[in-house]
Image 1 (tube, chains in turn red, orange, yellow):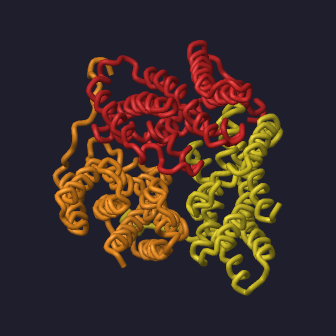
Image 2: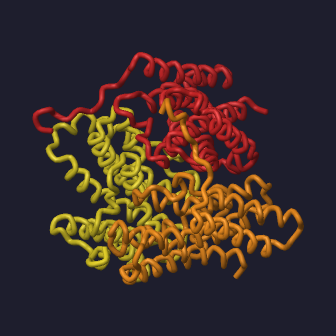
Image 3: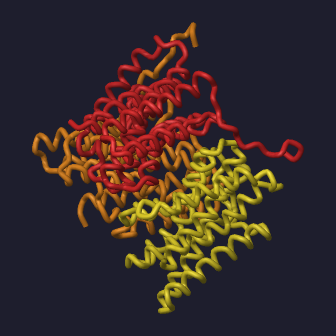
Length: 207
Length: 207
Length: 207
């Protein structure tokens, strides 16, 4: 099993847990948990594979990710009540999943020989689309779009660090590990210390 | 015309009617009716074809389903006012469409030689995504996610019955007919007798 | 650079501006602006390319549209406060983008040799899906679905004018220019004079 496949698996498990947590906030039944967990888990990677015409889609080639996501959903279904603040858990689980999905998307695009813009975009899309689908389907305000909270920005910084290291001719696996670390560190800092980007403000007197 | 094509057509007509009913609840104009009807009618099958790299997509190869869905939308536009409780109609039409879309998705995946997990997933996706798109675009609470109401679960049971019969070496068409019957019977029972799966409940004192 | 590519570029710039305007209404940060601008700008064309199996997707082949959309987002981020009525701007920018996206979608389908139904549908999808994604992700009421306001209808009329001229054996570029003009003229008339299609009305006493 390649390093890229491992990354896909790990991101699947963590995104599935975050999806199941959101399902618990929507009080779905166990099949609804599994549905949202799978959508969140494989959503970003599926968008990446469709856009890059990378067939078969990773979970069609080997459905293990779906099975893992469904098992994770069942686990969360029976244990989520042990957890105090579920929104907080969603946010932190999501930060780990983001930190794994971004290098997974970046690595896949690099392996296919795409240029830097597409590589960074695929890192961002793989990181952002799973969570975006989860939130749109469950009618939550997308984490991706919380005002001033860096999310897509962290994915972008992570993906850019990977492409820089590859351009400096470091091995791909090292670049992807650094990418994961940079993505997570920036997202975690933003969460811990309330970092934010300046948001758009309309002129006060005219609003 | 193969049995699978027939199933696609029938599910198109019934999903189109359910889409047009939802459009009538949103008070759209006649082109909006046709748009939502087509989205609902071919959405699930299109997702299936894209995921399985089954090109041309069924309605690109032969646009008859689109034409039928648009005609159905026009019919509903001029007759929906004759119907008393439109939400109730949406729910029942949707149950028939589900019962046809699940075997259509299952059959397509079996024909392409996929394994049982992918077959069941494609049955579920073909059944669920048309209605999910309809509800997300029209801002209704997705039927797929109504608390405790089995929907994806019925699709799953139906698809699993088909794969079981094929594994027992029954002919594909028989398996798909049983799949349709099982899907509809479970969904209709759930609607008629208010069957539900236990939903996730947070611990009462802490919520 | 072919005429079709030029059309894609122009529609990218105008859709990006409309996406960034919507982002300004949601008060996102600058990366959020770029994200929504790119989604709006390439969404419709991406759906068209995926459905027609036209790989690589136009912006994967050449990421210039993404770069342009992101630059436009930055421009809007720093200048949108100079604009008085931003919703009004969104609506008019969107009308221009629609008038460019419809011939772009129509032309691509004609070049691939598809029949009239698919050609008209691809014109409509390319025109409508970018704006639809923008509005669904940003939680605005989809412009596509505003009650009685012709939007998809204008796309349809435009696409039908193109296919008619091609059928009359006029050169493709002329047909696409007429398509753009017809689409924009019908949309602008609807906006200026409040044209509307009759919407569905349930029988008053029974509602």
